[in-house]
Length: 375
Image 1 (cartoon, rainbow, N blue to C red):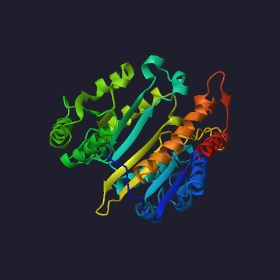
Image 2: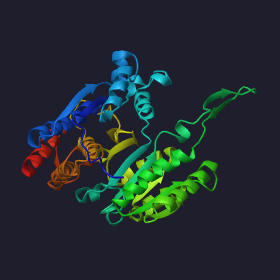
Image 3: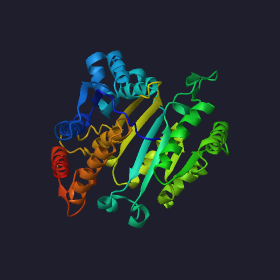
Image 4: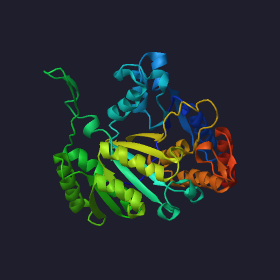
């Protein structure tokens, strides 16, 4: 996959800050959006709207139809976080997370990109030995709109004897598998040229189909990329034992959910990790895309200025790269974050002895200063 080379004449960003710490981390990202407008003449048409619990409080639904339309009309969506205990007792269909799932489903965002990169300054923050994680740079490509989370039939049934049965269906078509595998192969060509396809072909028919289709696509279009296969349980073990053996991992929705969180914790903090969710290109070459930090809404620290804004900022860097083809600007943002960490500034989630504890805004201030030095 290559980044989009042709910039849209009017770059439309839909910003959905969401709940908890979402508004705080998004505020720092919007400062960088403004900086790019002033210093790099990159103008974005920014529209802000509601999602999750905030949308339910305002509209009685976790995602209003008007917001859904705006998302489809935008060139990219930036999302902060959704959810919190305030909305825990809502019916399932009205929970904040359903707003995010609706965005993914209706925009057909089938490929979730989750990088796990260990910054040199944060090697000691990982719970794994430094020699295991130093220099780690892997990418997990997770299928996002199929499999266990969306398969039918699903639900909880009453049994004749008085008990209950929960049902979820794990299902994939050949085309669902091929399209996400294609993105993984294309990304691997830009990195270490290795793809590990992960499933459970030893016990699941959907896993057998997954392995067969990935293998066929590799032979047809990507024979230059090194392909390996691994069962999901072994992959979970290998990520802890020797994570640097991997470059790009492509897997289904359920296993990707689990493995990407495991990989995330190798880096020391969920507050450091970005993600992108991409759809297919339309006839005009445009693709729907949503960018969000991996961390949740962290309601326990919301409003306290303690949140780490870096994951949200790095998600915006992915937006610059994959939606707008702005590789230089994406790298500029990423390097600014790296230099701030190298200088010893830390939010609470990545605090280490001898480093300087800063607030959300102070971290944003420092990143903007680094950007100014690079301008």
